[in-house]
Every structure is written in structure tokens, then in C-alpha cells.
Image (cartoon, rainbow, N blue to C red; front, side, top):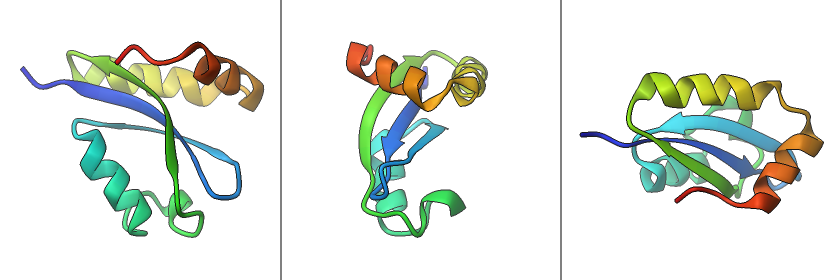
Length: 85
């Protein structure tokens, strides 16, 4: 069974980016190499601040969508509570 992750990263300009992947280490390497999402390309280095794991891509994507509706303040509160790693 493949594990999927929804994550929040903090960019070098202190903005937050939300994404989903099945390989968090590889995805972070891509973001930091400037080959990840268009949003993060000019905002490296990025640091992972929150992860949440799921048993399916669909679940992870649903949670990603939910997180994208959160305000920055709500995302920061979630980060402060910690991840479910």
C-alpha cells in the first residue's frame, strides 16, 4: 500500500505552500532545486513545516483542498499543533 502525504512548506519569503505527494523527501528536493511547483521556484529554499499521511491519493488531495481554504493564520495554528507523522 502506498502512503500519500499532504504537506505545508514555508518558502524563503515566509509564504506557505500546500501540496500532496507520495514521496516527501523527493518532493522537497524538487522544490529546493527549483523544479517543483511554479509557485515555489523563485522562493527557495523551502522548509517543510507540516505533514499528514493518508492511505490514498484521493484522501490526501481532499485534505490539500481543505488546507488551501485555510487562512495563513489557520495554517500556522495547524503547524504549531504538529503533524501526524
